[in-house]
Amino acid sequence: MDFEFNDELRALQSTVRRLAQDKIKPRARQIDETGEYPTDIFDEFRRADLLGLCIPEEYGGSGAGITGLTIAIEEVTKYSNVLGLMLLLTRLPTGPIMIAGTEEQKLRYLPGIAHGTQRASFCLSEPGAGSDVAGIQTRATPDPEVEGGYILNGTKSWISGGMQADWFTVFAKTGEASSRLHTDIGSFIVDASTPGVTRPRVDKKMGVKGIDTAEIHFEDVRVGPGQVIGGGFQLAMQSLNAMRPIVAARAIGLAEGALMYATEYVKNRPAFNKTISEFQGIQWEIAKCATEIEAARLLTYRAAWLADQGKYTKEYVPMLSMCKYYASEVAVKASGLAVQLLGAAGYMEEHPTELYYRDARQLTIVEGTSQVQLGLIARGVLGHDLWWD
Image 1 (cartoon, one colour):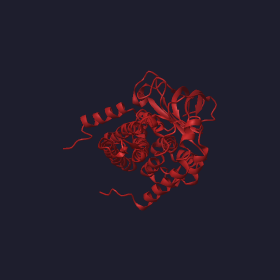
Image 2 (image 1 turned 90 degrees about the vertical axis):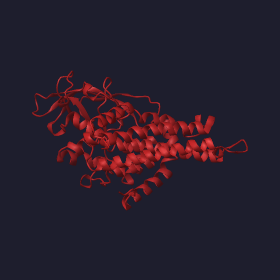
Image 3 (image 1 turned 30 degrees about the horizontal axis):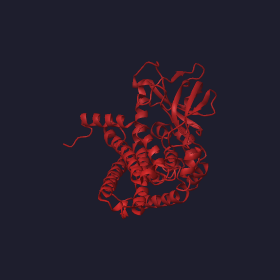
Image 4 (image 1 turned 60 degrees about the horizontal axis):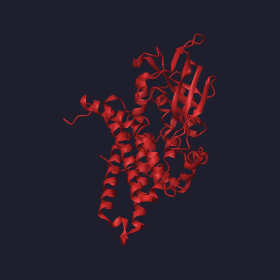
């Protein structure tokens, strides 16, 4: 059992930490205020070769895997959860292709992501089907003019990076819209320039501003046989299972950043002839939060290791879901504590604590709510996938 990163991962951590301190920390507030896509930081990621961390070397990536991406995201989100999302989007839409795509699909779509010449989004959620994947209504019907092709119709909602995407991974019903059979769901790669693809709405968000969350509409969109991934419901779940540590890394970094900022503040803020940090009650709150952050880190890095071994099938779901559930809840607690430790100052925009607080809430919702994760963990225990005897 080894809890140390190897030399390559330590070097990666050091590189991203410097980049985050030098380039991201000074930009975080401005990105939130303007809501504009931070192209300059995307370019920094590209120059640092961080966009292909999770993509195998044979497809243009660096082969650092989910563990490498988790390390990078943790460092980045100490200052900006938006830019953690930017890195996350190199894995979420490419996951189905890496798991179940053909060699031709991998060669066509993965290098562009790794090299930063293309961006992509993952289209699963719909206005009436968020956590309920089997309830999606977007349909893929056989194309009468092209053998093996399909025609897509439907709308996807809350799609992160949707306005910047050059292509989408789309899940749709291949059977009747009312069917809840897992075999009646398929996955497809859709180029954003395909006729019938529109992006009619950009959402106005409480936080995580700077990467658009959008609605994507598909009207009679033709998808050729070479853009069919297949895989169905199981592929959607495996893709999301593998993402749990990556989302958790965003939460860990945010929690660390919030607690570090608040700790430095209370060490220097005088009150009642001492500093705030000298009060035992404050010290206990800092200690409890630090302990929870470290517990979340251990859960997350174990989950990243599992995912890199291809262990994201049903029997590993409890351990993968635990890290996402626990880390995102810790992020909410840590950001709330940071606001409280700063008092009135923490509520003001001159400090980043209110930004951490707004951004943290998203993490308990995206890619499976905390309640969904609890359900998955419970089913794993009840079914003895997680058992201690």
